Image (cartoon, rainbow, N blue to C red):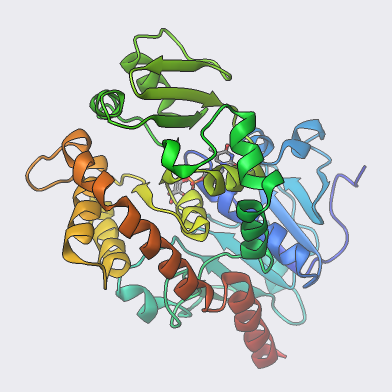
Length: 396
Ligand code: TRH
């Protein structure tokens, strides 16, 4: 059990608020664990919504949120409105422009050497990102300077979260009999890829899934759809004329078989992505993990009120599809836009599916090449550590 108030000074201190879904906690929990594993100094993570943390990090469910605890080397703490600042970290990260508590800022400014203060931004493939990555913003009143750190897909940005051992773990899972083959066999799924398509489906609400499921039902080869408990599940249930779908349900309709899976921890979710032939992902963290899975995927971008997400979607498509034969590039772009309800000509996912399905072998090779190219770049935790060391040397 820990003290109600932290007393030691961590190297890294991350503040995270849940805006909606898991996303922000998903990214922050992954970053915190990555930093802790690299033994780059103590890591403390503050999250405002303990219940959301507990879904992604089941060990938190057994803790008293008022006391916090340590999981995977990360000190987890609940950030409540009654937050009282203690000793601030040497590096303080506010995730996604969440506002740091005023007492935290005062405590930071009172240090003999001000902590490095980072705003970790959302991931985007847009070109402006490189120009904003690393920019400084002095606090209007206190002797503190915030720096913007943008994840991204090229050398001029903050990169992507990728734990050092991730791809080796994935490769072992895919090649060893007790990995992918056993995972699929245990769930009654075809082990050989030729015997059917295995799809994971993690998504927000999506009315268009009804017609897509119907297309899969009528497809020439079996399609197994693995749906972890998530916001799309009620739409899947309605499409299958089921009042609800519980974990463990297995519903067959023609060539289609829908399996409902539990929501697992993040490592379990990686295994799901590695086990499937095609992954539907959403938001930010699952979107990146699908890229490390090196398999074809479909991204449902988090919708923004002013449709700004359409530009983000197109920016990623432009980067991702570069170099692909036009037919495969067009098939992916059309299917992704349809899935995000932004096809110029109103094409639906069901209508775009046949061409996308035909392109899957080409897209599979492309997904591997994209993953390799991204993996050749330094990862986010490495770049962040370097960026912060540079700032600290400047401050010291
Ligand atoms: O929760 P999301 O929709 O997140 C989004 C984005 O971050 C978006 O940019 C942000 O603005 C918005 O939230 C508020 O999707 P994301 O980012 O994929 O996060 C889901 C997390 O859930 C991810 O870390 C993977 C994890 N997960 C599991 O751990 N187990 C599971 O079984 C499943 C399905 C997911």
